[in-house]
Amino acid sequence: MILTRAFWQPHRIVLAAIAIAIVVFCAVTLRWDWVPKYLPLAAQGLWRTIWILLTSVVLGLMLAIPLGLAQAVGPWFLAWPARAFCTVIRGTPLLLQLWLLYYGLGSLFPQIPWIRQSDLWPILRQAWPYGLLALTLSFAGYEGEVMRGAFKGVPKGQLEAAKAMGMPRFTTLRRIWLPQALHRVLPTLGGETVLQLKATPLVATITVVDIYAVASRVRQDTFLTYEPLLLLALVYMAVTAVIVVIFRWFERRVPTRVA
Amino acid sequence: MKKLALTALAALMLSGAAMAETVKVGIAAEPYPPFASPDASGKWTGWEVDLIGAVCKAAEMECEIVPVAWDGIIPALTAGQIDAIMASMSITEERLKTIDFSNKYYNTPTVIVAAKGGDIAATPEGLAGKILGVQVSTIHEAYAQKHFAGSVAEIKVYQTQDEANQDLVAGRIDATQADSIALDAFLASAEGAACCEVKGAVADDPDVLGLGVGVGLRKGEDALKEKFNAGIAKVLEDGTYEAISKRYFASSIYGG
Image (cartoon, rainbow over all chains, first blue to last red; front, side):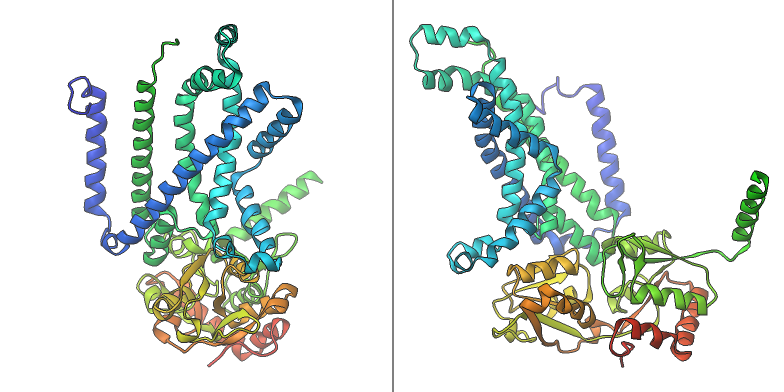
């Protein structure tokens, strides 16, 4: 794609030139001697960021599908809790949820002796499970709402046709309803995944050493302000670009023509 | 009446402008009792806050307390947002590369606190395989990275000492290293008294632990440094230092 002529339009050439100029300027004028020392730590941090992002998006989406379905067509005893969950998650700051889980729930566990003695304790005393849980619940809350709209947006005729053909309800969901709903939300999902990426630095506040935490550490060790932050911005932009490309690819693979 | 008020206001503003330029003294925005913490109304109180007032008065300076995030307090000083740091910042070689310091105004030992009982000691062997919590960019973090990194299972870094203390109570870390005074305040609280105790002071290392706490200043501002030094000397001499210390501590914390 990058080598084709269509890609190199004038505005892209100008943007690329500006980007290169900025990079060269920063490389020449700022201090970068700390980079080799922190590279292993940064690689670890980046891996942790990506790992937390992927896991929370996949798990969150798996939770979002039943949440959306329950709100769209579920009976009231499923729809109401699902709606309440989405409202609470979307109505409170993620940082608050994270701290409630880590400093709230997490400090209740050790007071219960059998948890402290169980095999789960070495995991429960770490910080990442709380970070992952908070990010997953948050993603599920937002996407549950998106999926509700998507399920409702699939043309009724499609479902009625499936029913008329004698297709079982679950098969209808699996082969017609869910694929069309997912296809509708793919562009939204791409954007939400990028937003989720930018929510991950919050885990640094509960001692998870992600890429943001590494940049903070460099700032604190070296008293440099711009260099680590600029590099961090570049890393997040690169990851965002990868996410965008992946979702484009998905969007192109899924046929737009409905059966 | 209105006119009178306006005149009074103008007079106030004029007298304000006529006074010497205010010295902006940066303190850490994160509470660090009993040295500096905001009370219920948001007013900063504590030993260090009182000392700032006393030193500024002794040196005949107009001071304004400016809370700055601890992890950005040195850049804030070098960028000119504040003129001095009085936030329990130890004088260390590493910091002296970037900023200057006044003479020390207190010096207290560094201790390890852990759950009661157990076999933890304030030595690399005594902490082998344990999880140690420290506050970010403190001398304690530097000390832990230098002396304990080889033997402990993990060094966890917190934004504030309070968070490290909470996690110690919650059992997510096995021990924490900090200034003895700061940890005494935690051990005096109900939570701290129930769970933990001092396991001993760590072996001294002036290279990392520094030479006590001083006023952080921009390099080259020798006039201001002299003023602070004179102010510190004066409050030590005239008994103000001791009077302030008595309000918060059992004994003087000036140290050797």
